[in-house]
Amino acid sequence: MNPLVPIGREARALWADGKGRSLVVIAGVWGLLLGTRMIYPVLLPYFRAEYGLSLAVAGVLVTVLWLGSAIGQLPGGILADRYSERSVMTIGTVVVAGGVLAVVLAPTAVALFAATALVGLGQSLYPIARITVLTDMYPDRVGSALGVTMATGDLGQTVLPPIAGAVAVAAAWQAGLGFMVPLLAVAAVALWVVLPEPNGSGTGMEELSMDVARDLLVELRATNMAFFAFILFLYIFIWQAFTGFFPTYLVEEKGLASSTAALLFSLFFAVGVVVKPTAGAAYDRIGARASLVGVLSGPLVGLVLLPFVNGLPALVVVTALVSTMLGSGAITQSFLSEAFSDDLRGTGLGVVRTAVATLGASGPVLFGLVADRGYFDEGYFVLAGIMLVVILLTLRLPEPEG
View (cartoon, one colour):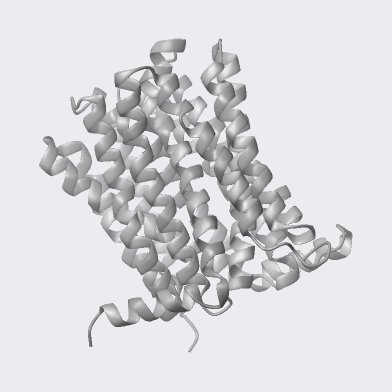
């Protein structure tokens, strides 16, 4: 059979019944938001020079960004359950645009940290609403829909950071980040215009109460969610530590130019454009356990090899190996989305993702402390060890049904 046939069939199914336009906008804005976030690691050397930040303090800055991206997911999930996903996603995008503008204008390090927190908070409103609306739109293809959306996110992370790096070299770091403000403003308008107006005042949960909390606890226990959340926390810790410092590591330890490091960083996400839809489709067919082990094995090897390799060709190969971890997002988010009932999906996702992302945000600051003490390479060995633990725990997930 021609391998393009099932891909074409899946694409037609995702586009059918007028849902394609909404999917394109949701995915496109997600690409802009993630691209904005991943400009930070590329500009980190500029932030260090401009505001006199050590590696450890730079790690705190990245942690502030990730922490902001985490703590708003619970309220974002609650709002998604009670009100319009369209409103929640639009407001979040507007807040990110305002935060980016504040970063560009920040006169001091304190202002930089505060504006960065605002960028993270705005981004945290988007993910849960994105998942809940896609789950409603594609009840039988949530893995594929999320895979496509997350691949578009990786496209944004592939294209925007090297553009930002090139603009920063040619002009100033402020221009390398500031060009995102008008793009985000247009994105907010597109969300409001294209996404359908909600029917009624909410999607199921009318008010927060002890009954809601009790029902949520029942669902968390019934799905063995604590075990899965622990796996997700370890993965997020690795991912945030790696992405937060990879460009800086390439410049300071491997001797690459900033522009070359930005391109290699973009390669990391470019692989995700292919891996994520494949991983999402694999989840739909073989379940979480087998698909997760498949996408996490390459990063284990890559993280072990990274300190030993030098030269651009070898670094390209290792970066591609590590980047297959990006496929786990389509798997874990699909698993989480299907683990909760319709009425509690947004709130349940918000609880789990806020908890694990908040804890995982410690990754960049801890990695920065290690790097500041001259143990940059050893930090990657630690990340490899944690990845091995993730794989071993993943093997204990239940077999897929059917």
